[in-house]
Length: 356
Length: 176
Image 1 (spheres, rainbow over the protein chains, first blue to last red):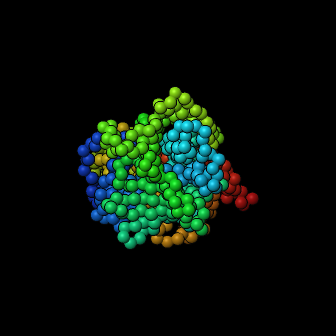
Image 2 (cartoon, chains in turn green, cyan):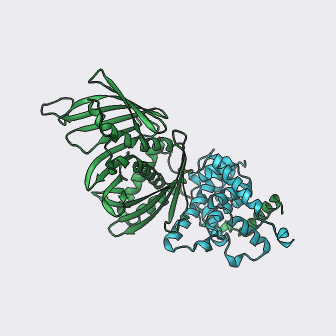
Image 3 (cartoon, rainbow over the protein chains, first blue to last red):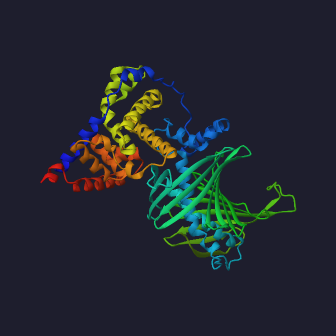
């Protein structure tokens, strides 16, 4: 049998399976929803998070339906006819892909490898570059996310009910392909537990998540344990689903001690592209404002603040700028080179760091 | 590409003829995308009815000038995926059973068995791309929009599907 005959056979057989539809009954039963007055145009992200925010308000009343309702609501949101991938798919995709990136970029921390942490520079920011370096990979992933695809698929893993595929190309034109599998289990007190498995090449990364209401905020926490038998070493990605901003909190814990705690805020199609703030040290605040010059170059403004005992009109919280400047980061295939210009010094320094 | 705009306006008035026109010109691809996902013809028919019901009820949300068929097929695909997800939450599916495009009891004729054999060779995504392409000659640009995949990926899955279908021996070849 020739190919054309086979295709014709499939068409005929499937067409013959279609049962006639009682169009009169369908039209009689259908309640056409009224015209919705035109909404102001938001950027993609704003609209999505607006939807979630409104959804969450509804969920505060009908909370037991929680996350699965968000999926349903967004997947049938006909105002965005192309929205096959629900918001949850996007949140899961970003968390999953950035978790995989972090498994690489935190290797030095959990392997007690201090070789990257020392810098010969006298710049204060020099000691912060490791932390910045860790988040460049997730930021890059987010940059490429606009160009790539993530879509729900039927799970082919019988341990997981849901699957999202994330595929495309990274900024360095490397092929990206992630299979994200997850289960959601509803528990009493409006809590949902999530178990996720991310397959990226030969690497499998497990994430354990929970969605719970804390102080009227719906919080999603996803945790990756470096060793599943040891709950003292892990990193955690936290998202406040009520937050209208696209902000993610990253906490790295080693031997039960928080050693890194950062907030990453992303702005889609805007400049600055991202802001990374160190939340760990109350005595010294670091803020990186990240602009993407092109796909492989970031321009970063940085500012390090420390508490001041003197009144400072510019910094009402009693913080004073200790050092500020610019960093130009060029991301290569295996390394990223940092050129730092401090406003406090005429010197510059350059060094390269591995990036995954 | 068919121009549905006038018919859409008429559907808002619940015009039966307009609905019939749209139904007849889209039913094959709507059925194809649903059955490619749920792999059961009875459920596919039920979800098809749900899809057209939702299409009528949400017709005011369709924005003039957009690709109507892509909009409708996105509804159909979401219905099928929602169904599949719910079903997986209810019971653990027997994977070997779910691989069949049709329940075994329904696959009676030789022709039917051959179709089943061919479609079972395809992965989920290959089946969706392949059926959308053959049932109504949708372009890979349209398929890529519906399935949220790059055009090249759609083409790639289609070519893989064709290769697999080619390898299946037809009924006459079985006989010889």
